[in-house]
Image (tube, rainbow, N blue to C red; front, side, top):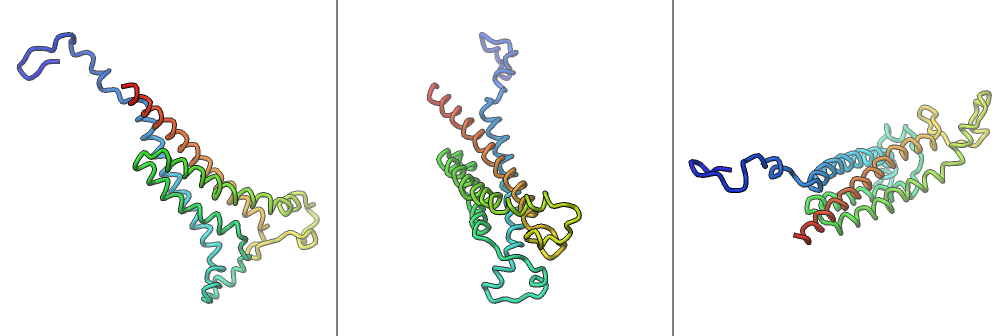
Length: 200
């Protein structure tokens, strides 16, 4: 490598630039997984808005606000797991703070929180509506009246309530799974970087 107008540095002919330009793998992994985790947080927020729309009737009812259009939808009363799942949104701020500061401890807490407040309520939902979904799927075609087999239906469209929740659970659990996966990759990358610093 030569300085401007000066001699070339001894021991190199300038062909080792590829070695000097290479970014360590853990930094690439960290940047990639940070970006992907941010996307997951965004989709988590989208799912929260869906849940908030479902809970709007109950929230407005508790605030003593009457909106005819919402009441006409005949949205079923919410269960406690729906509100608990909404708390998982608060964890997104912890996760974003962790990836901004490369904080392993905060990211671990984020992962524990997603497992408890994200997957926990979803698992309860699956178990709670398991009977309804099974009865609906095993119902004969000639059994048109679902009230005879005791399946809770949403009056708008006549869709089985449990099946709609299963669709929500499918999407939300994928988001939470990828949140944990990308967080785990970040933890590995940050630990590898810390180990390299100790050896230097």
